[in-house]
Image 1 (tube, each protein chain N blue to C red):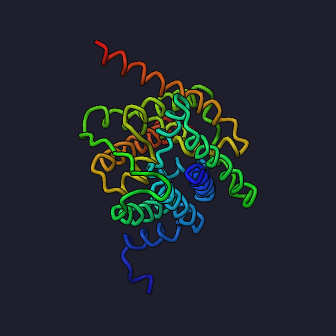
Image 2 (image 1 turned 180 degrees about the horizontal axis):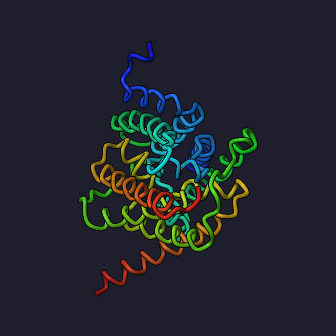
Image 3 (image 1 turned 180 degrees about the vertical axis):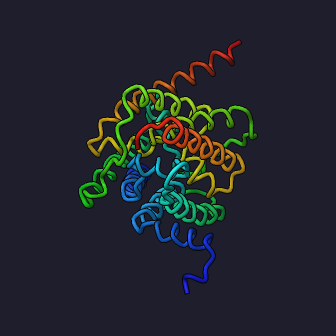
Length: 141
Length: 155
């Protein structure tokens, strides 16, 4: 119960933050990613302040044995810096710069009367499942 | 006094002044949300991972987190309707499809997105996430600049 309520509260705060910060406006995102014209620095403010809070919060969490409402911290897999990481993030970035949406803001956009995100989210779901099908097929061989 | 500054620091001062209060406040909330989720239940607030795992295997906390994102954004739009804008032309159906396919595929293959690798990964000082952020930022800057400048897509 407390776990689920915390997840809901975190989601609410996350969505509110995405909206207020301008991340849900793909024009703002593209203004930051487009270095060919007038550059808009706002996303530095968003990412910078978010990372600052996260840095403090995650370092404080190192001193804790367990989360407040769960028995333990789920183990995070230690993975190397490998080809899938590089290629995956390359493709993600190429797509991000095309329309200005990454997953969080696109999901938040469902509440904002923005029909673009419906098309984007269906395609995003398709792309993700396609990748997992492809990865399974490759590992079977 | 300002005239004594060299052009480079003028430019930098202008850029810093151009960062608006709301963007910083919003960023602080995003960071706080990620910290809350980790301290409360030990989960990383990576939206792409939560979204795909949630769609495939469910998990109430995932659906509540995602629903919270939608509701929180809706609340923000109610409180500050002037911030709810899309300040670029609609890129069209096929660009949206291509963009969505790339983001979906890429975040699955690369194990995260702006929130998981960006906000949480950098906060956790993960070398993998730092590499991920550098790669997706560079790629995003490449496409956005290419489209809007060299290919003349209106913005």
